[in-house]
Length: 398
Image (cartoon, rainbow, N blue to C red; front, side):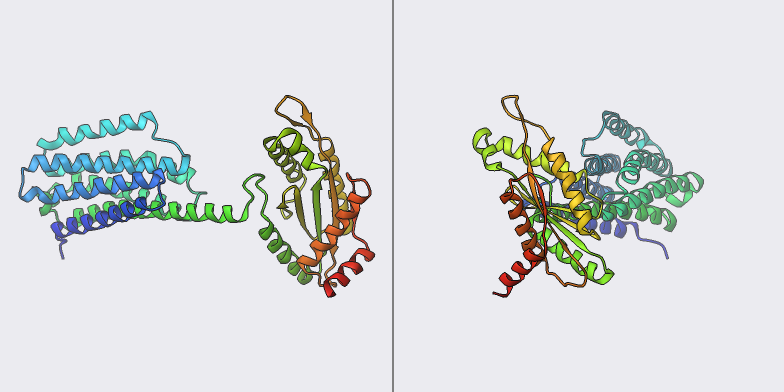
C-alpha cells in the first residue's frame, strides 16, 4: 500500500506546528533558555517549510521548492545551534555558520534538475549539515541528561535516513516521479523517517531542557548557594539515612559539628564579603579531606556538620583533628591585601549500631561536645563521652 505524500506532509506540518506552539507557550512562562528558543525557531522553520512543499500543487513550483528547502536548511541549523548551546554552552562555531551558507547553494543550483537529483543532492546536504550536531550530541552530550541521549540517537537516525534517501534517489530515480507528491512508498518512508527523527530530536531537546531545569531546582533546594555544601534539612535527612544503614550493616556512624571561632569578628572588621570568602575557603579545605561517602553540610551561619558513615570515634576524631590543623594554617586574602587566619572548634559524636540513636539525638550530642571545645579555649576537638550522652538523654526525656 503506497503512502499518500500530501497526507504525510500534512502530518509533518501538524507535528512541527505542535512543537512550535508548545515552545511558544513555554517561552511566555518562566522558561527562557536559549536552547528552547533555538528549538522553537527550528520547529517553526520546518513547519513553514513543509507548508511550502504542500503548496506546490497550487503555486509556482520552483518558488515553493526554493522556499521550502531553504526553510528546512534553516531548521537544521537552529537544531544544531540548540545542540551546541545545550552541550557546550556556546554558539555555533564560525565554520558551521559558513557551512549553513554553503548549504543554501545546492538548494538554488538543483532547481533545474530532475526530482531524483534534487532529492539526492538536498538529502546529502542535510546529512552533511547534521553531521557536526550528531558528533557533538553523541560525544559531549552522552553524559548529560539521559533524555538528551535520545536526541543524539534520533539526530543520528535522521542523518542515516537522509543518506539512505539520497542513495535510493540515485539508484532508483524512477521511484521518485516528477513531483514530490508522486513519490512511491520507499522514498516516502525515507522522508518520513528523516523528518520524524528530526521532530523527535526536537521534542527530546525540550525534554532534556526540562530535565536539566528540574535538576537545577532540586540542587537549589538542597545545596547552600554560598559554600556549595548541603543545607541543614538535607544534612539531617542524610544523617538519618546513614544511621539506618549503619544499624542494618552493623557499622558505627560519626557526626562532627564544626564551628569557626570568633567568626563574627571577621564580619564586623572586614565586612560580609570577606566573611563569605572565608566560608568558601573553609568549605573547600574540609572537602579536600573527605571520602566519597562523607557528607559536608552547612547547618547555619558559620556552623557545619560532617556525616561520616562507617566511622568509629577514633576515625572521626582523627579526621576532625586534620581539619582543625588545615583550617589553622589556612590563609584567606582580605580586601586590604592582608591575610586572614581563622580557627575551628569541633564536637564529635558517634552512634554505635546497637544504641539506636536518632539524627537529632546525635546532633545534640555533637553540639554538647562542641560547647565543651569552646569552653576549653576553642581551636580544639572534643569527643562526646558517656556523661554527655547521659545528660543529652535526660534532656530528651525531660
